[in-house]
Length: 308
Ligand SMILES: Cc1cc2nc3c(=O)[nH]c(=O)nc-3n(C[C@H](O)[C@H](O)[C@H](O)COP(=O)(O)OP(=O)(O)OC[C@H]3O[C@@H](n4cnc5c(N)ncnc54)[C@H](O)[C@@H]3O)c2cc1C
Image (tube, rainbow, N blue to C red; front, side, top):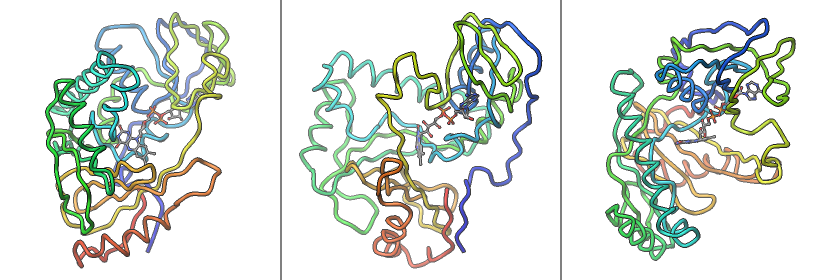
């Protein structure tokens, strides 16, 4: 049986927040209650700032409910590219900012039951040993020593992988559910427009000194002209039940490469990426991959397939 839903939604009750009514002033208004907006609200709340967050639907139900939820500063083979394009100083700033974000998550997750686990992260290449070696060299120059790995626990040959120790994975909705409990949030409050410092919902106005747009894809077309610079993409994830433990998070560096990680007895297999509206891999690519490759991993994973 195949059914499409997010595994993070299973046995989860996220608190419901009221709809915003009336007109209000606040120092900081956050628009969007995904992981980005909720974390902004959490840190502003900790600092004692006057803030409110408005979410068009329910918190966490945007892209955040469909993430594979890996917390890592390994973003494919990015450090060699960043160093070549922007220089060592900026590449190091990127590395340090992302390291610091991971440390903050580790601190926050100490007190939250959200299936947080430290795991190594691997980016592997099927035909690009030099790319992996260049990445390792670039990282060394930035002060981060990594290992070259020649085989990962999957039944196909790789030309090499770069390994980052002590990265992490978690259940993003359990995390959001706990961290948002006492925040000043309004749900079912869709923002239609921003006019200078005033935000318009269907029937109400909120005036704020600062406005944070955390809607994932910006809905205001004027500032930054992001609609010209961004495009929407699709990725597909399937969860195989009773799967073997691969003890880590894996990403193929190729443009349409697969990615993997366990969650409890599941193995998430992601891939089939393409630009929205253009032809691409879809779920079929992952199903083929499972048939051809993953089923060789362990015969016992012939369980049901579920979609994350
Ligand atoms: C298959 C997949 C795997 C991924 N894996 C990873 C991973 O392993 N690690 C990682 O770090 N990232 C991963 N990502 C990316 C990550 O999921 C997203 O970057 C992150 O969840 C985005 O969070 P967000 O808060 O920016 O957006 P969202 O979660 O989409 O939240 C935006 C919110 O804004 C609300 N909204 C939109 N417009 C309005 C409006 N006008 N008024 C009010 N509210 C509005 C929406 O309802 C939504 O709830 C993955 C993504 C996908 C699709």
